[in-house]
Length: 216
Image 1: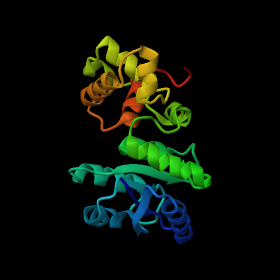
Image 2: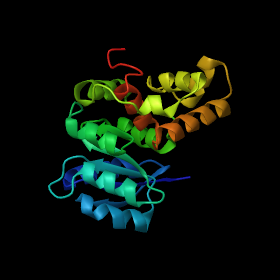
Image 3: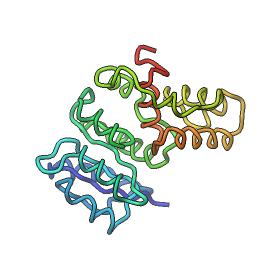
Image 4: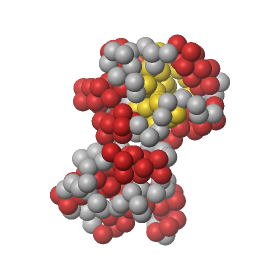
C-alpha cells in the first residue's frame, strides 16, 4: 500500500524538495501541498493523507496550532511529522505535546526523510528518542501525575520503559522473550490508560511524570 503525504510549509523550495524526495519512492506519494496551517483541515478531509509533514514555524497558523486543531477535530487524523530547522526548539517540543508523532530536520538527507515518514506511518517505534529526551529535559515540566493515574501493570510499565528507548515492537518482544502480538496488546493498553494517541506522547508522559528521567 502507498503512504499518502501532505506537505505543509510556507517555503516553496522546501515543499519542492520534499515532494521530489517522497515521490521518488514507490511506496510514498505526495497528495497535496499547503503553505499555511489554515489550509490543513480541508486538505486532510479531501485527500485523507496518512502523514502530514508540518512546518513548525509559519507566519499564519503555525505547526503547533495546526496540529492541535487537526487532532481535536478529525475523527481519524493522520500522523503528524514536524519539520524544523533546529532540533532543540521549544516550538518542536510544544508540537510534540500537541500530538505530533515526531520531528524531522530540514537539513535531513533524503534517506532520513523517507525513513522518518515510514516510521511515523507505521507507528511501531519512536522517532529520534535521544533528541526527544533532550527536548523534555530542556522544556518539560518537572513532574506530573499522568502515570500515577494510569495504574499501569508491572508488565505495561516495563514495556513503556522500553518504548522510551525507541525500540520497536519486535525489539521489545525479543527483549522480553514474548510474542510481538503480546507486545502490541501491552502497547495498546499503555496508550489507552495514558489517554494518548501514540508512542511519542506516551514517552513524553513517562518523562514528565518522572517515571523515567532525561538523564537516564
